[in-house]
Image 1 (spheres, rainbow, N blue to C red):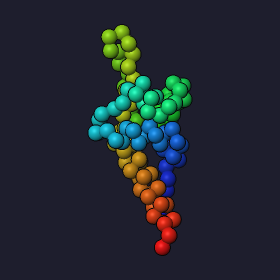
Image 2 (spheres, rainbow, N blue to C red):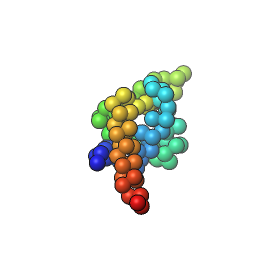
Image 3 (tube, one colour):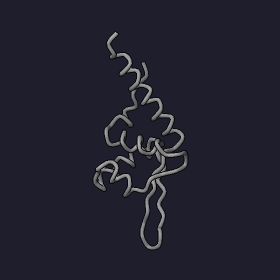
Amino acid sequence: MAELDEIIHQPLRLKIMAALNALPERQGLEFVRLKKLTGATDGNLGAHIETLARAGYVAVDKAFVGKKPQTTVRATPAGRAAFARHVAGLREIIAGSAPE
């Protein structure tokens, strides 16, 4: 049975990774958009993004658009692979619990 990824398994981090993995490679989401999608507060979302970044699962790009700061988060290749393994593990659990 596949192991679930403890970093991704946390509900908010799972939402972040699901949202990022729905995008084409190298495309990211702005922090504000991720905040709306997940319903998280600024501080909570920032802390979970930092956890994912330390694991190498996301890359964070900071820039200025005009005079406004803009943070964009995207899944890395390692993050996409980890998410795929995690989803496969969930599918194994689901398949194993189905009545025969």
